[in-house]
Amino acid sequence: MLLKTLQKKPLMMCCAIVEKAQLSMMTRRTYSLQTFDPSLDPSKQKKAATKQDPDEPVEMEDPYVRSTSLIKCTLCGVDVNYKNAQLLSQFKSSFTGVVLPNNNVNLCDKKYKEVCRAITTAQIAGYLPTLMKEPIFFEDPYLGKKSNQ
Amino acid sequence: MPRYEISMITKLLDRNQKVEVLGSVVKYLMGQGHVVRKVEHLGDRCLPVKMEKQTEGSYFVMDTDFSREAVVDLKKFFSMQEDVLRSTILPQEMIYETFECTGDPENYGEKLQELVKPKPKEEFSININADIVPFPL
Image (cartoon, rainbow over all chains, first blue to last red; front, side, top):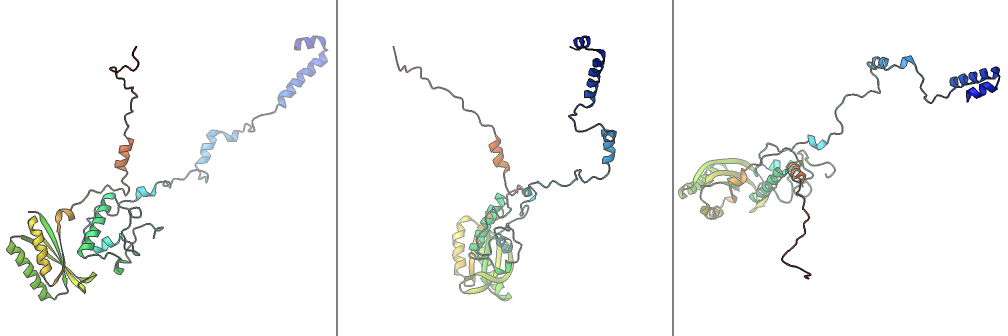
């Protein structure tokens, strides 16, 4: 197409066409917003990161760890007997004298059965009361969850 | 012979009276042929339950050996005593057996392993009895 236009049109017009093409290249719209800057080299960025930036990650403990994995059975390695009334009365409620369920108390299934059996034998043998919790033991630490207190 | 544990609750007694009561009980047991290994005194305290209109008492524990047929006779003997308020006889296998603690409050380990096991798929099969012909020619 250019050869046909050059043959028909005079020389002055041919030069104008070439200059238009050069101008269009100069004023072409750039689709990338970034322009090349020597200061933004990736090799230079690593040297600037050695300083303490607030946007960088900080080393800390895992906050999303399940809290129950850190809790252990409270009676692990402790022998339960029907004669010590103070330890068994910690697993009774102070309002009604009823044995607390296993949801509120952090105990294994096996140790919870031992405690329930020891409480019934102590109530029959005369070491613990049945319908209440002795007021001497009210100040003992509470082993259940705070919401169900 | 199997081992038993006897826990005895009596009225509040002086030191001289305790010696008399314990002496009469142990003499009867030795006379019958039973074995007495240890006698302990746990102390005096306010009773948690009113027993025969008494509010204070003293506690004793005895470690003995005797046969299974003698349990009923011993209960009668303790009920005849005036000073003894309540007595219990328990086998030591029931009291001193211990379970191994797993450590976790929620024992999910055994239950999960049963669920994770791959179940065998039931193969589809048509039960054909070649002996029976429903639509014979």
